[in-house]
Amino acid sequence: MRKLIYIVAVLFAISAAILWIGCSDSDITVSSEAGTELNIDTYFPLKTGTVTQFMEIDNALSDTTYHQFSVGGKVTIGGKQVYCWISEIIDRPAAIDTGYLFFQDEALYYFENYTEIPEKLLAAPLEVGSMWLRYDATQEELDDNNYIDIFTNIENDKNSNDGILGDYIDNKDDEVDGSDGPIAEKCFPTTGSNYFVVSAIESLSFDNGSQFENCLKIENSAGEALNYYWYSPGIGLVKYAIGVDSENYPDGEIVGRIILSRSDI
Image (tube, rainbow, N blue to C red):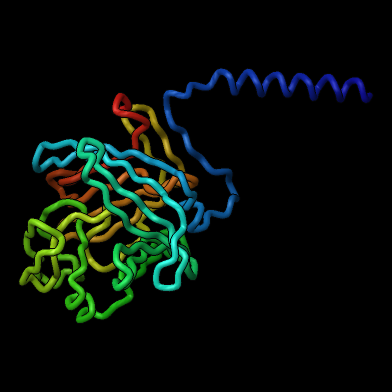
């Protein structure tokens, strides 16, 4: 009997090895087992040294850029332990900037300046229909603080569709008259009105064969258009689409997706 059990175990191990060797590493396939609890840190693991690259296509300008995001080490800012979030445009070595991420009270927060009210990127419960404010602030506080709240230089009404647009600026430090604050680049591609909602939990696939399962699809508005952000378990952000409407669906004005390398397009 023991010999039979041993033989079955060996055959099972050999079969598993064959299946593993037979898998191609040219594609990304990410899934989570049924029943696995998916927490905030599952959908955005903060691990020092993690690097992801994105191809971003600006459909309005017919421009393509490659972005690299890295999780740096922990630092203490304002008495809080946070992780550095390093953003760079690969084709422009000088275009490197840093933001900060941290977990608190079942939520993931992002900020670029310690004086800012942090932006809540993800919040529990992670279920369809769940909604939260990006900034836990009053309209007056948002207007007075002039948040930098756009990934690329396009006009946007960020404060709950109040109809007021921020102004174009040439430098982050320039002052502008728009009550929605300066419109400039920041290190994380979130923008739009002051809320996020989980609109779906779905599978996501790219033309190159990469597949991601159980992705959180986060949504908010951008005027009459919508913005979407997809977070995959064990990876984090894998795609974003900015300014999506009936004319440019599904990619919107700007679309970014995670890649393995430049050949992975």
